[in-house]
Length: 222
Image (cartoon, rainbow, N blue to C red; front, side, top):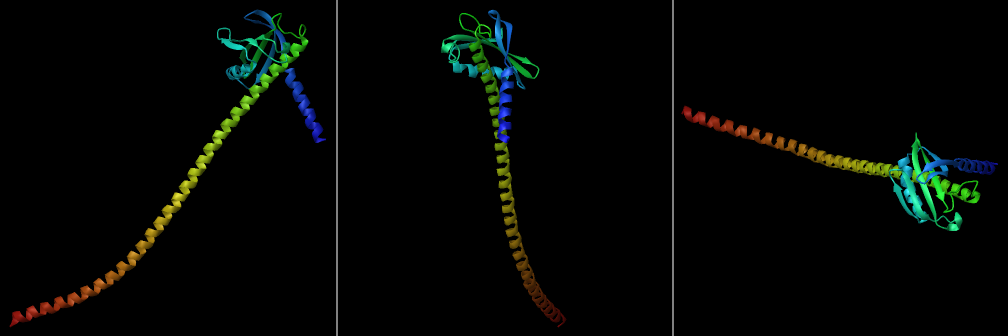
């Protein structure tokens, strides 16, 4: 029963993911053409742009970005599942929409742009390509999050090592202090014994002083 629930969830997830790809007609550098559109939540256009720059390299074409039109152009790209891997031109625009990014994709087969009506099989594969890119964005976000929590973990580990080192140092300081206390206690006992000996010597010397004084006084009286 649990396995069936997981399977249903995965199917629904796949359906919802596929449902995100929409077809529309949008203006681009080559005029108004049929496009595929994907909205990716909780991400900036700048972030998606960086991911796309690496993602599109997989498909070999010469890729450049026109900053003025904010449009990526991949000349003679090759996608195995589209046009049997023959060279195609891929255009893409990535824009922010609140806290999400919208990816618009145009694919020129040479004879026409991909649309669900004219090239249904190619359109299906182009949708999969766009979904794959959306998934790559999520993977990149997850990898970045992993790297961030790993950095935090390393910092916590470093903090713990420092705390342990400090603890060892404090124990060593206590040991050194205890040794000094023991040494001081021995010195106190010795000092007290020395005081007793010195006091006896002082008393003996005082007797000698008194005897010498009496001798002087007696001589003076003669």
